[in-house]
Length: 217
Ligand code: ADP
Ligand code: 5GP
Image (cartoon, rainbow, N blue to C red; front, top):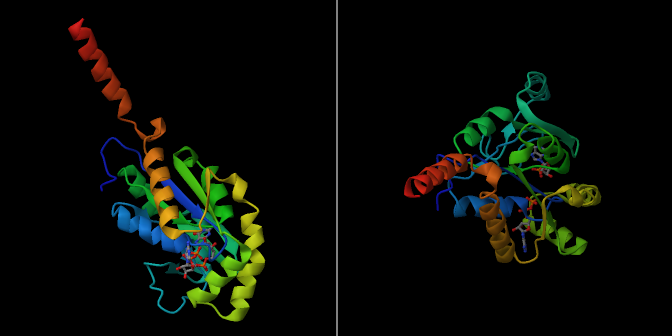
């Protein structure tokens, strides 16, 4: 399906959750569903994990380069997470939404809050994913096989901090069954695209209806 229409404003779609609840998996599925959906590639000062590609998974930056971007106003939001800096470069997001494309963000609650409070806040859809249980969250972090035991323990330690911000989001989904959660996400995105504020072309359309109506009467 195509998300792009000339009379549609782009939506900033934010996915947050504790680490391991399923954000990346669901973001990947959503981009397969809608190939027009752009992914905001974050910048980070953390080291790449095995298999991560610079420019695709993250822009891996030195701390000095990251801080210059922040100082130059080139980050839409940024935060310190798990001892590293993370941020969303502003340029690609601005370009995408001006073209009427939606942008998907995998960011933490601090970033979500900053974007919601920014000038783009009214064009934001924020979704929080909860795990079905803490033991399942742990199981997923282990089964993902990307982190050592110490990193997993640190992520589990931080999970409550992230979960405690669940009530700042527009939608909250319990990611138990992956297919079901994907269906729910598709529904939420499809509905939100029809918000009046996302359809700047409506004024012209209604004016056209009015003209036609008056010509007929
Ligand atoms: P996050 O991006 O939030 O850190 P991931 O998307 O990497 O989380 O998911 C963590 C692990 O859990 C992955 O191995 C993924 O395949 C698995 N996973 C995600 N959602 C589900 C689900 N609903 N049921 C079972 N496993 C899941
Ligand atoms: P990871 O190191 O596992 O890739 O990400 C750790 C955490 O940082 C996740 O909660 C993820 O959502 C968050 N994160 C990734 N990119 C950004 C970003 O650009 N901004 C913010 N605020 N958080 C981010």
